Length: 544
Image 1: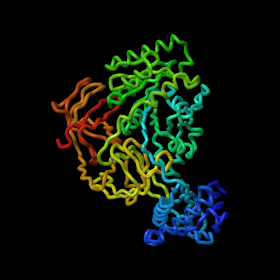
Image 2: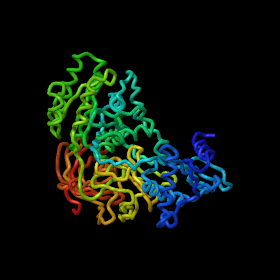
Image 3: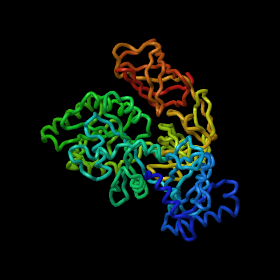
Image 4: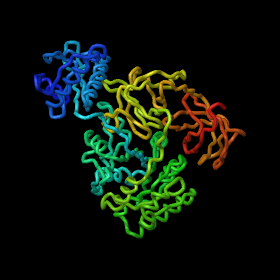
């Protein structure tokens, strides 16, 4: 018997009894169970179950009153979870976790969350307390750096407060397990999170434990999320996706003291600065080299920054106050660190605690979809960073554009941030949004979620000012790179005004998507790449 199947069996064995914390329901419907009078009664019943379980109740859905496994259709199970969520909210509680199992035609329990099964049965854990309110500050930091330059190890030590063993043990804290995405409604794009509560830092004891990440979110007044990227050169496209596709507040570029700046370091720095992202450089592994070598790498980093017209600011020399005040598109603080000795990590802590959020935007809700997946019993989930405005459970939204340029009406079932269910998400939050009214197969990266009353006008082409950072010859009419704009990664055609662009040139070009339209707005910045050719651009006209 698997651990998952055992969880279901334990709930069934405990049984539904008076004064207990377990409740059996075959299904819940809006028409019947949310009717006037019935909703209040069921909410009171749920509250009783929660109190009986010392703040936790278990609802088994898809079973008869005597615990017999019946199984219900996926649509019916989704509706049951919607109703149960509303009942929990009425009772001052929230759904913490849902596990589902497929049921075969003969009533036997099949594999966990089997989408092809004849029915579903599920166990929902209800906890006391309303869904998390997330009004506090939340900065999002994009990490970059050459492979083996200690990027993930540094972040692992930051979020846990634990030193590395010199072999990269804290790097494992940032590993993302595929089954976590498949099993839970999660938007864990950032791979790591820690925070501050006014008295100090709030760190994770075990980053692999969902409840530990949720605890950090719940206890912190301020949050720092890290969007980790890939250090290997062949995966530069993935790195660009992480740095361009999220609503980042700051960049964190690592340079190993035992290696110094590399070609990949320059590539990543170019992307960070081209997107006008305020950036911090962390020189890592200072414990592994002499003080003279650290000073030498500091000088190399300073030269690298000055070569691209940026002003380096050594925090050890000028102080954290100066770094917080001066960091900008033009001034780059530099911190020397070691995840083994923890040198410099208190400086980074102070920086992240004091740095203001840079990307919060008012106005209508907007979120570009970065990842999609399906959770059995919940349905399609779109995850990404809220670019502007706010979204709440129950909101009516538009999703698109589809291949034909149309937008589809959808409803927000629920919202989750770092494994914690929330009732509202504002600009800058990295979230997963469960959607009603669309299949997961129809949701694609690069689509956007907008308010239901929006009037979006997707385009096949737009005009842009571009700068060619690197190209072996010239960019001519019909040149075909891949454009990375928000979460869009799409092949395009360039049609430069004047017929061509040379390396180092800036100029105007018409950009045409090759396969389908996207929602593009004036002022959005993008990166384009093809082979060794790279450049950046800004959208100037969406109706060229």
